[in-house]
Amino acid sequence: MTRTWLCPDFLFDGQSLLAGQAVGCQAGLADTVLPVSDLSVTARCVAIKGTITPGFLDLQVNGGGDVFLNTDPTPSAMAAIAASHRRFGTVGIMPTVITDEPEVLDRAAEAALAIRGQSGFLGLHIEGPHISHARRGTHAARFIRPLDDRTIAIVRRLREVGIAVMITVAPEAVTEGQIAKLAATGAIVSLGHTDTTSETVCHALAEGATCFTHLFNAMSPMLNRSAGVTGACINSTAFAGIICDGIHVADEMVGLALRARPQADTTFLVSDAMPTVGGSDHFNLYGDVIRLVAGRLVNSEGSLAGAHVTMAESVARLISVVGIAPDAALRMAVTIPARVIGADALASPLGRRVEDLLILDQNWHVIDSCATISTP
Image 1: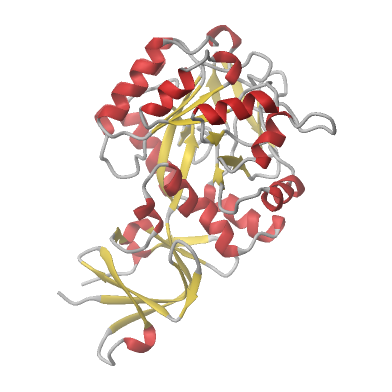
Image 2 (image 1 turned 135 degrees about the vertical axis):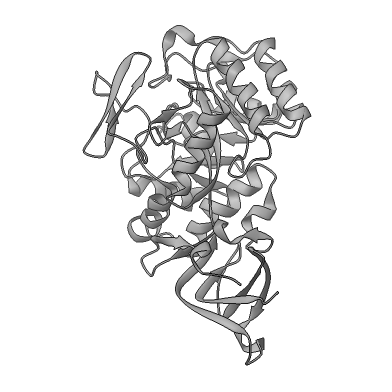
């Protein structure tokens, strides 16, 4: 079978942007990377104006294409949400179930078990209900409860079959040893929706938490005499997700946080996307109609209720508005999320299906996937 060589202006290899590299594709897979200068004169080469990169990975996705996971916690809903985001360059997602009745989490876990191994499914993100009332955001207060054995058993069951799990908890909602118990399963314990102190955060990190959920949002702020959760996160070497839509976090603050963190490549992009991405301009949340108004998703009280942004838009904004170097921005959308969930191979173009490789134009917008380029 003849190998086709894709020859872009630049190739993102998971770490850096490389010029003069060719990606060899055969039988629908990218299996080789070589310098263009090493190709034979008879090689079938396709010149590509732009950058080839592995597709984006999003570890916090509530919905898409008019499908909301909490409303429909089923395998078909997870697949539909993944398909909706794939249209915008996100090739893998962690469907995210937010604070709700215990039965909703039960069903979401069953759905994750059923869809395990399918393309686009990276694992399950459990965001609540074990969070702080004071920093609950749009999460319904009536469903918030302390971490219990029921949730721990769900996490353990998912991990026993190899499903990646991220669980967002507030230190206020756990007892001594519970974070360690979750971490022992291999789950990613992420601190979020919390109003606690930086000292308590340090204790939670020492117990096994390794991540923070949407930095700046739904956490106690950084003040001159109190670092809060925000300051503790920025000062730590833990992973942290961040929403870059110019709404949830000011662009200046995104740049400040990235420059201030003591260890590079620990902050990753999340969309926190709701059903309006790839869908209509409204959806139902806890019986309230959430509407898209001037790019903002707001509830009946005018408060933010999730995000209407794609990973592709976030990457472009990081580069063009925040001023982050393109290779660093791509690592935040590809490499670091892959590292968080222990799937480093997803940051490399090698071994990937051609439909999981994106073509970006000179403004870092997604043009299409490499699947549009025919291979014999």
